[in-house]
Length: 302
Image (cartoon, rainbow, N blue to C red):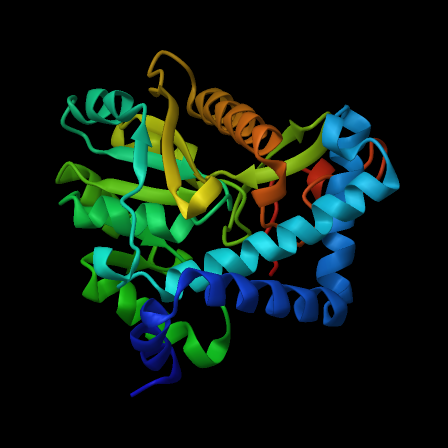
């Protein structure tokens, strides 16, 4: 039995107060021992503060949000480990908002590309959709740590979630869309081969081209979604908006337009739930800085 499998069995049995205490302790340790993650997060929070976010107006406020994000990440990780929790152990079904947008997108018979940020417990959203009977396909790189990445993939596959890596290309994803399934892609992930320049919170950035390219190639809609943790440990899965490829446009123009839509949806979701956005690398670059975010198409770098 792997360490991850053992955690999947033990964590659901722990009472919520214990899980909360563990998350606080591990988050504090992670914060203290992870200078690179701290700096990446601070870079983003300063940029979003300069954009005018009301919770990030002062250094003290940004530090408070920084610590809240570290804790949110650890709460989410423990929630991932407790995914087999039953109602007898305090499991609560997530609340869906805007599900009609998802069903409307799927009514065209071409599946849907679902984009979401690293917000709340994004793993729970994928699992919840699979449990409801949707055909679900995700693209991942190294998950959590090399020592558990294989077990994490096996856990997804045992939950009927198809898993691909960027090296697998578009063909498996196109197959899922052809069957009317959902391809769920993290809009702010760093696992991609091509990027599109956008502006996030008023600053230059790059987002993966994959969602737009896949939607265009499959003539499938893009549904913008996010997950947030509510008070009391409940979760809300929101299908916020949707759009379709425009075949009247040239491919490059349509991909740029669709990626701009991904950027705006990501910006709205993160701005409304800043304390749960778990990205620990710089996502934006100051104007005039010759960073990767200002150069257009990029190659993936972890």
